[in-house]
Length: 259
Image 1: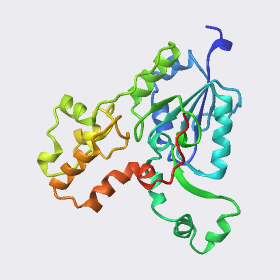
Image 2: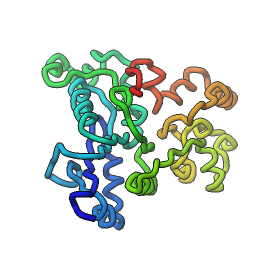
Image 3: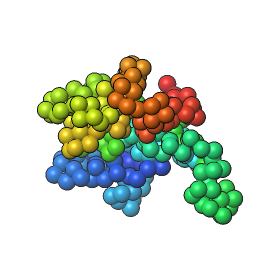
């Protein structure tokens, strides 16, 4: 395939740790093959060159400043396809925990006595996923994203197929991995309502599902809340469980997702 025919791909980051982009770079063995099919024209974690001409944009991070809204809208106008990369861009992620507080209190916690000066440089707003600002074509969930999911997604996209999005709960992955249900161990878990695709890695390695991949479509939240309560959690504790990665929706401070 001629180099000019290759899709031009860009990676962008907003408010995040950039761990999902590092997962992309961890595809060391696969990168030569990937680069034979695409041209990466913007990727701060991997290269210094930049281009504003791209077809596909992978966007990591939640939106938490007015300046980021402007940059994200520019990306949407340029890209033919926009992909939300990871929990922060897909659901708002951990960053949305700040939405429980007023933005003035957030600035005071971060900048202390210099909080007032921060307004000159950063106009902080309640954190939100990128689909609260622009239309998103596809999502790759996780915190961070699974390497194999990124590779299968990119393969499908380059073949002109619609990438699959897992829509069964983590409990299915847990059973396939042969894990004992953590509820039987007296530990609470968000697996029954969380979107799978992670191979239940957290439970497999001795902890529980934190809900980083967001909710499955039409989750039975009421039933799961009752399950959590039966295992000793009071209503406030239940709310905190769901708020770790789902605070954007529970706080009602996000903009309406764009269709």
